[in-house]
Image (cartoon, rainbow, N blue to C red; front, side, top):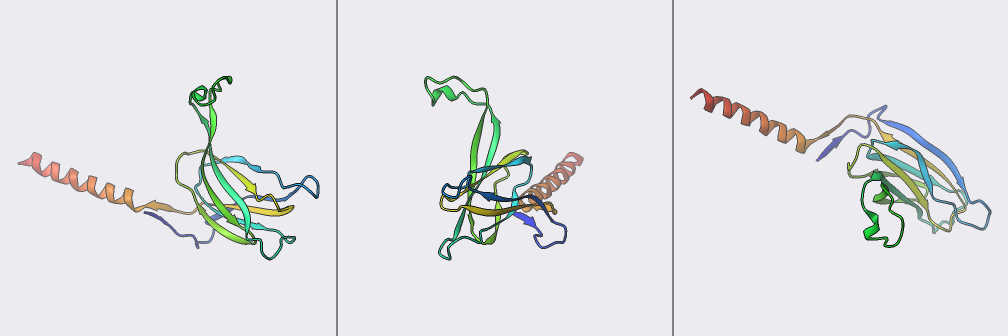
Length: 161
C-alpha cells in the first residue's frame, strides 16, 4: 500500500499550465502531449472552462504513455513497415471539468509521457498539472524488508548452532 502525505507544504510542483483553444471556433481542441517525460505517477489535474455549459461534467482524459517499447509490430500491422520502437498507451483517467482531480497511475516505468485528450465539444480549456514530489513509501516494500531482516537474524542463529 502506498503511503503519501498529500497535504504537506511543498509536496506539489506545477509542471504544466496552458490555456487550450480550438484552432477555429467550430472545431474541437486538439489532444496535447505534455512536453516532458516524468518519473512521477501521482498528479493533481485541474481543468476549467468558463464557456462550458452547466451540464458538462467531463473535461477529457489524461493518458499515461510509455515511449520506446521494443516490439515486433508487424505481427499486428501486417503489410506495414516495421517500427523498431513504439509508444504504448498504458493507463487513462477521466478528468472532470471545473474541479481538481487526484490521479494515481501505476508505477510502470521511470519515464512516462502524459497526454491530455479533451472532450470533443469543448472549444477552450485551461489545464494545470501538478506532480507530487513529497515523500512516498510503500508499506509492502517495508514489510518485505522487515521479513528479510528477520530471516537474516534466523539464518545467523542457525549458523551459530
